[in-house]
Amino acid sequence: MDELLKIKEEALLKIDTCQDLKTLNDLRVFYLGKKGPMQAAMKSMKDMDQAQRVEFGKVSNQVKQELTMAIDEKKNILEEEVLNQRLRSEKIDITLPGTTIPEGSIHPLNRIKEELEELFIGMGYSIAEGPEVETDHFNFELMNLPQGHPARDMQDTFYINENLLMRTHTSPVQAHVMLEAQGKGPIKVICPGKTYRRDDDDTTHSHQFMQCEGLVVDKNITLADLKGTLELFAKKMFGEKREIRFRPSYFPFTEPSVEVDISCHNCEGKGCPMCKYTGWIEILGAGMVNPHVLEMCGFDPEVYQGFAFGIGLERVAMLKYGIDNIRHFYSDDLRFLNQFTRKE
Ligand code: FA5
Image: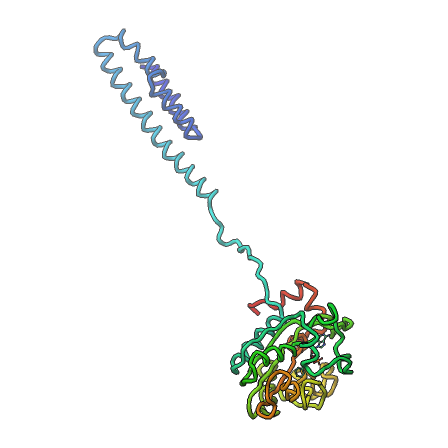
């Protein structure tokens, strides 16, 4: 009997100080199993008389019950601890700042291009495209710039061979569109795209730049239509208060030709460094399509008139966003590009 109580005390102490479920299970197997000290103590029952045996049996059952209860209780405690530990280790800290996925930004020139497209599509224009590698015939001849014409010097050209060149402006798309229309108006297109010139790169000039051509051919088209169109463009692009003015100019493919200024949006026309204290900023070239160009491109100038304009996109973007160097557009500098995220 003493032996039984000793085993119980020893077992209860071990169960109490046990730290993990595996050890607890080993204790259960050891103390309550067939090969444990309890079982060994039971063997002495055969030497007892009937009364002692009954008493011994009663006490040994009690000890077993107590140990079973102690083990179950400890098991619950240890299982809860394991669970808590797991919960702690698997806890997700939702207060941590998230990892942001780097987001691309739209290039400012594409942004201006998209804005222009939206504006002109809203006025019933469609978008035309032409090749960047162009023939001399389309880039110059059909634009009323025959071989040897002094105005060819206005546009220094990258020649691929005698007849092929990188287009110096988007105006040859005018010829493609008119020839496709086979003398039947109306035509109402814009053509944004890349252009190339052998200009020396500086803060306002690049050997590759972008233009957006506009062409309208119809009956009864006048300079007033051109002015109204460009006025709307200026207001939408630079603000409702903008005004425009025409200055006489010369392009072989338009007659008359004009250079178009907008009132400076920086100083409201009062005069500032941006507009060189004139209150006006030049933004594009335009004019009435030269009757000879209409004729060469299959339109009867007695029936049809047209206007055309050519906008330098870098120029517009520089003015609109206050960019002081054209090289920024082509430098791939993320510090510059990231200022034009979609969020802004
Ligand atoms: C022309 O290219 C004419 N084709 C525009 C035109 C179209 C006139 C239709 C009449 C009717 P100009 O050479 O001026 O014109 O160029 C137009 C614009 O392109 C300029 O105002 C300027 O903003 C831009 N540009 C010209 N050269 C460069 C360059 N090297 N770098 C950046 N922008 C340039």
